[in-house]
Length: 81
Image (tube, rainbow, N blue to C red):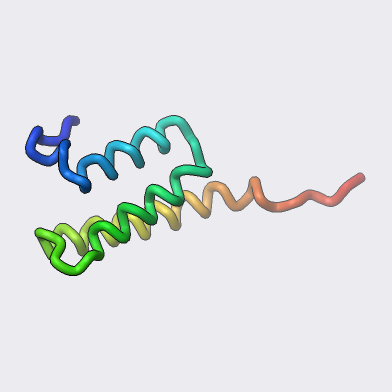
């Protein structure tokens, strides 16, 4: 699926594309920062669509929550033998 041309060149479109690229590449170090940037972008006062802001905010929170759940086992240190 492709974003409409009028959305691709906006900060929102660029932020979504960048986050998608990092997610596809499984670049966890960048994913969290980009998700935070997207979150902050849509939470700015005066964002052009309040309903879209709420939806994207929820999606980012769920996405990060799910990512942390899947990544958590990697962070658990196993006892040395």
